[in-house]
Image (cartoon, rainbow, N blue to C red; front, side):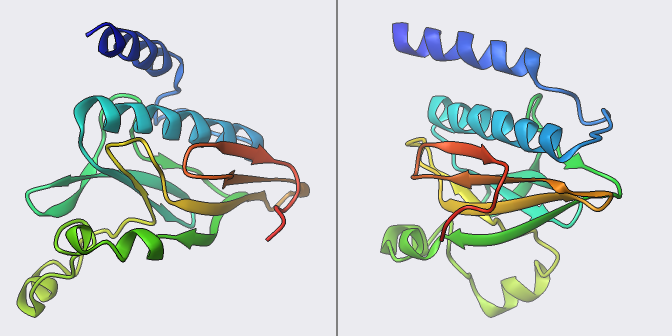
Length: 175
């Protein structure tokens, strides 16, 4: 119970420091740090509630997803609201490693399951996750490039070093 109380306090403090979704992000550095903080909070949220979360990236930002009712649904709890940036900031997911997790048969029937063909046709608009955050707190590996079209030297990289460590880099990570 003490551990749960401490995690709750940490989550509350992080939630209060995260910016709202209406704040204009004006640099690659700000966007990278915001993403890093939100992913840390999402990891804690998934562990405390024992519920898988995910994140889906697009060219101009990202949104969080939650696994509910046998499908991924958009999730916008406080601190995990979708983030959108405007030109000149752009996002590019360069690598992801969900293949190892997808090999687990139990997960294949649920989180990674493709479902029936008919269900797929009906849910063709469903957003699919790029990065999975498990209830254990582990996260699938990824590298994300955030760049500013007006200042190419200001690009930032958000990368997972392992299932637990997130880093913001000024230069492209070594592959």
